[in-house]
Length: 284
Image (cartoon, rainbow, N blue to C red; front, side, top):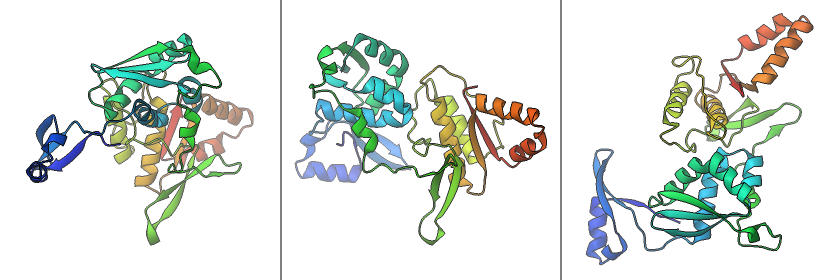
């Protein structure tokens, strides 16, 4: 469902000449790419509450861990939208508190991407949503298996994903250690709290080792640190298919160091990491 249309000023005048001006409200003119364009911020065909919430959930999906997405956002729904306030129903007070604390900012940002009129998201407890026979709430597990979503192909016993670069005769496939191909810099929800790390990650992806080396990202749970880490790795592999990117947790790295020392394999350990062009360490 479209809630914003961008068209040239000439096209907008043409639409008004045909008597279609009543469809377009809240017009603002701005300059995009050197040409004046009109942004129409309203559209006569509005979303239903369910369609609105599904659109928000689709934007949230790549930014939240799968287990959290399934646990906390299942059987939720939009009750109403009025005066810039989006009212979301949750099945329990505990779920409401968790969602508000951990994902509140992300949900607000995603909602504003869908409908710019939304200024606030509030949560109300409706225990009927927890009942098995209830069909009002959105079943988020269905969103995880969209036909349009590209599936990540994993190599058995290798903990790798395959990323396709280019198209046609120039198409090639590169491997990446445990990177989630769904995470990208383009689908990261940017807000005033995370605009700086997002910009820094874009710079690193464009020029690995040229700036912010090393780059350390600090923040509370649920703010998208892991998303940015995976996104940088994926972007580097797309821009530089010959680069070697390795992703692991700090705990895993420490375990490898201890094992290398204990088995007196430090030389092979050092040799392995000297071939890595980009090392991504999570959960430091």
